[in-house]
Length: 556
Image 1 (cartoon, rainbow, N blue to C red):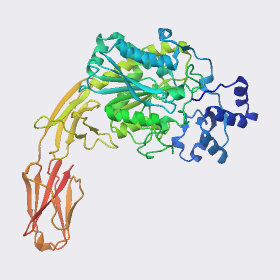
Image 2: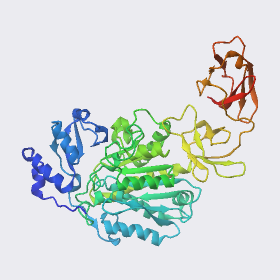
Image 3: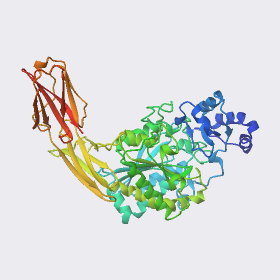
């Protein structure tokens, strides 16, 4: 376990540019992480800068957290920098050494108290709350999550939602607020909004995603907390990235990352929120792409609702950037972030909540931040009860694994999939949408659904097996483009006399088109206008005097 104490003298030296480099090296040896500032214009000179731990630029300067390797990169590139104060050492944090000392919610629980609180929730409310383990950290601390639901011991066909905080170990406002939110749900059940959420959702809360970073100075204090984990890796640059690959930061997946990926994959979370600090803003996807998410208007809507609800309590809080919300890439590019990993690879919908301008706020300010946020925390979860709630089965009622997408709308992995029970959830801004449901070995279906804000649309889809047509080959021929919307071309390498008919069947075997191919067509190309066909999957067949061959065609 890393335990270090920074002397006042060392901190004074760190802020003196004449002595900066030597104390920074000493500090790196002690805690593995330092904070410096540099000219923002130099960012582009750093290889893989998008996976570094930069903060948003202020004017022409930018702060960055460095580990030993990154520190050496700046030296090798001759990029000037100056040391900055360590946020988690700004003042002595008020700590709670027992559950009783947390009764006013104006202290930071030490590690043992955190464990005791999590265990106590499950013990005090066994019908509503269960303690789950996500994994272990580098130093063997526990990654924990509470499941809160009305039938907590049963996996019901309900949306699974996830609140998780402090994967940056020195950003700790969310740490306390998530503990308090769990307490609020449990102590206020079964009343009003809380009853609705607990009865209709499976709510998971992980208050502390990087305990090694938070308790870098030992289990009794959050002073000296680090952004990174015990291997000095930024966990929010350590996830697979849809643009920059599986390891955008050049590091192996950390135990905390592996545990979280496995946990989230197991639970099929449809909505989640990831709590950070250092600003006051809701950050929505993408962080890695400049292009907007297919459901950009829905993301803006739910973020705007969160911030606007906060503003009914305090107009000066959560007002950064676009009055409390921002597109991630527009703010600053991040590679390897959890938000994009969840949204792209797991087809979830995750938002990053920068919940306090100061990473480690004075503990006396924690109750005010709770008051600012708890209504919005409830509202965000309520959004999971709206949208399209669907079930996909075969004709015998068996659950099917299916892909659900909206043609002409979805892109960049924005589609959704059913879970093991054949259930899916799709959250969209109000409008009429045609959903395409695809399942292997079943006829694709197109279903139009009207979505209304703050309402739930229920959809049950019974998939049929195709009848009468299968795909097989005859000779050497192709169709293109595929998918097609207007004109398709058939090209073959047979002699012209060998190809004399083109037929098209739908998925249930109904003949929808049949044409003769003229014998004098020696170009070995045949074009056909299919714009009159409804969007869907078809089978194109070619005949010769001996056999028939079929290929699948998608009409958009």
